Length: 222
Picture 1 (cartoon, rainbow, N blue to C red):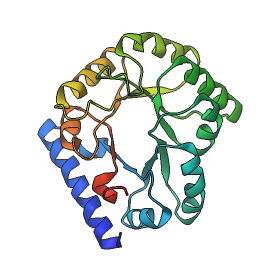
Picture 2: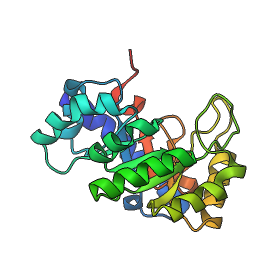
Picture 3: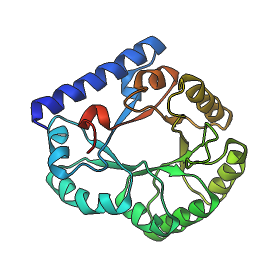
Picture 4: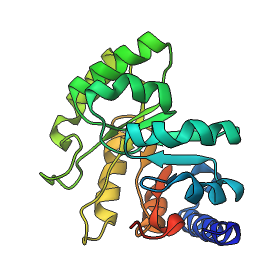
């Protein structure tokens, strides 16, 4: 992706975020754009870095470990968010590599992350992933189990800052985003990781603080 193409795509996404914020009476600076670079190599990522993007998301620990240390040596100030499912046995690697984790979804992972953070003396902001559409094929904590999981996280001193969701495909996302926002308010959590390339503006209008955008920035994956 040429640099000017990357800059144009990045500007278009920021424009969409700004418009959604304007409709909601929010400040666009309250929304963090996470460029989801999974399955894209360093050569595809560098133009976005050159265009000014500094926050990136990856789905897998190993893929991130393969490409990001070198990219971070080239450019200061990169923040890396884990936005995909995390196996408990990869918790220590994730804590060492990432700056935030969006997919906490079960008690065993809470325990593994808390142990890893204690051992490395690093506290990473975490989002609990909620299976907002109650879809059996998707990761995420069932809505009914969320209070108990948040209680576990607080007891383990895991820094949970908000909730994350992926709404059901092919359905209007607004009711699911609104439900996540209500649950977060009820639980006293201020941050919402929701909204992707296709439903970005809707998510921002409903209160997203972090949006995870891949296709609209990088194009379709092979």
